[in-house]
Length: 113
Length: 110
Image (cartoon, rainbow over all chains, first blue to last red; front, top):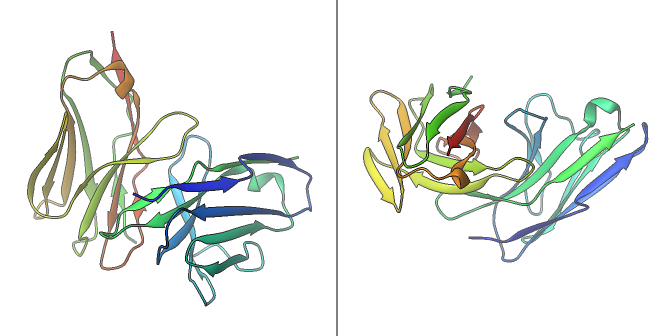
């Protein structure tokens, strides 16, 4: 299974600012994903990070708010732009495995004041 | 809309008992099925995957899949306090995107 790291592990940010979250995988993977998990709730897929092309966003998520980069097969970033308190959440990246499974990073806990 | 349903619990079982966690899904085209364990404050950890009808065993865990009934379950034998966590059922169709259930909270009591 892939080993995934995320930075930062947590952050407290002011309203109106932006935060970029980094996700690093220890091996090359075709598929990387970004999720949001609100307290006490399940995971919601934000987008699929595609290497060499634009990310594919799920309904309710837009590129202007959540720009994603995927410069190579081991790294991706998610930016949360123009933050509001409603963006306070845990953001998780995952890497796709050989048989459709996904392996998750430790998450980034974001608090917006 | 593809849905994955789980009883939110909490499901309480005594130590040493069998815990039975259930999940139903709406998309008949679903092909891959997973169980993740999530401890409080941690990220989901893959514990079981199953792709064909029947049972799959791995240590104290058994996953069961019935595609005709659109039902997948997880049995945990000899439950331990360390098994106390939220268990997430996840399903995927022909692509790689996972749809997660809301999770079942399991409490194993001494």
